[in-house]
Length: 541
Image (cartoon, rainbow, N blue to C red):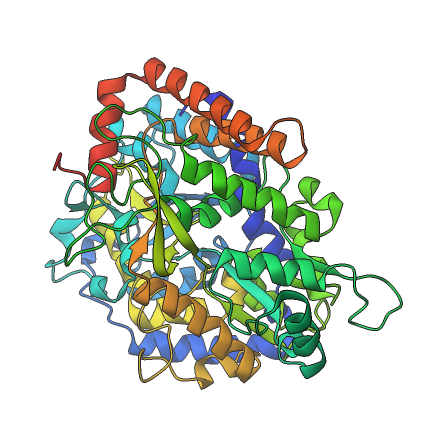
C-alpha cells in the first residue's frame, strides 16, 4: 500500500486503544484471579517439544502500541514470562503507534531492514504481504512435533479464510472481529413500548430484529422519546462515522445483505462471477461500488443517520459507544468491544440489560447477472468480518522462523486463546467453537462469569456471534488485495459526503468507483485481478 492510504488505519487501530483504556478487568481484585487462571491454562495447554537450540535466543514482534495491559499488545506482554519458562527463549515487543503501523512495517519489509521478525497485524495487510512475498507459509509446522497443536477447524470459516492465501496458511489463530447490533433488551421487551410500536408501524415490535428495515423502524421509534426518564430526548441508534475512523466498516457490514447474492443450487456460498461478490467484477476488475445494491445500502445508512445524534457523523468509537453505555441510546451498531465494555459499571448502566443480535440482512438483493432486484423469502443474511482480526505472521527475514512458529502456535492453542477471549481486556474477540457455550460450543458459562460478565449479557453476546460465524449462509469477502488502504480511503471519504449531504448516495459511490478504477490502473489491472481471484477463491467459473 502506498503511504497516502495510511490515515485510514487510524480509526481501525483506535478500536483497540479505546477498548484498552476503559477495560473492566483492570480492577486489582482481579489480578490474582488472572494469574491463577493463567497458570491453570498454561498447565493444560499443549506445549509441543521446544527445541533446546532456542534457549537464549530472541526475536521481535511488531504490534499496535496499546501497552502492557492493553488490547492486542497486552497478551504479548502477559504471556512472555510463561513462554520464557517453557522454551528458554524470549522476544521483544515492538509497539508501534497506530498512525505509524502501516508505514513502519511496510518500510521495514520493503527495505529488507529486518527489524521485525514477526507481526501481529491486521488482515487487510495481506494483499501487500503476498504481492511482495514478505511473509512465509506455515503449513509445514502443522505436523512438526516441536509445535503446540491448535485446532484450525474450530475457527469460524469467515475468519479462517483470512489466515490463508492460495490454499496455504500464513496466519496463526488469534482475534476474530465482526460487527453486530447491541440494544436495550429492557426497552424492546417493555409492553408499553411494544404496544406503542405496533400502533405506529402496524406490526409487532421485533424483539430480535433480523432486517435493516426493522432496525430502521426501531431507530425511528425510539429516537426523540425520553424513555430513560432523565427529562431529555433519547436516541434511536448510534454509529461511529468519522472520516478516518470506523464508518466504512459500518457501511461494509450493512451493505452485505443488499449486495451479496447467494449462488443457486446446493452451495449458496459458491463464488461465481455474479454470486458472492462485493467489491469488483472478477473478470474485468470494474468496481461494483456504484451498482444498485451498494446504492440502496448507502441510502439505508443515510436514513439511519436521521435517528441518532447528528454529531455521530464526526464521532469516533468512544463517543458512539459511550452514548449507548450511559443509557441515552437504544441501539449501537459496532464491534465486539461493547460486549466487554457494557460490563464495566464505571462507564456502563446497561449491564444486565444487554441485547445483541447478529448483523441484519435485507429482504431484497441485487442480482448482478440479471441486473434486477430479487425478493427473498426471508432476510438475506450475510456475515461480516469487519475489523482487523489481529493475528501473527512470520516475515521472510526472520532468522529463526521455527522458534516464532512455536510461540504463535502456543498462543493459538484452545486453552490460551480462549483465556484471552474470556478476559476482555485482551481485545481478542470470540470466533471459535471453544469460545461459544455448550452444547453448540465447548465453553462453560463460568469461563465468562468468573471474569466479571453478567450471565444473561454474555449469553446474548456469544449467541449473536455464534449465529453469525457458524449459521449464516454467506459472508462478505474481505478486501485483501494490494492497495487495500487506498481503496478504503476513497470509500471512507465519499461515504462521508453522502452522510453529510454533500452528495447523493449515487453520486458519492460513482466517485468511489472512479477512484478505484484509477487505483487499479496504477497498481496494474492484471496484477490486481490475479490477487483478487486468489483472495476471494474465484476460479473463473
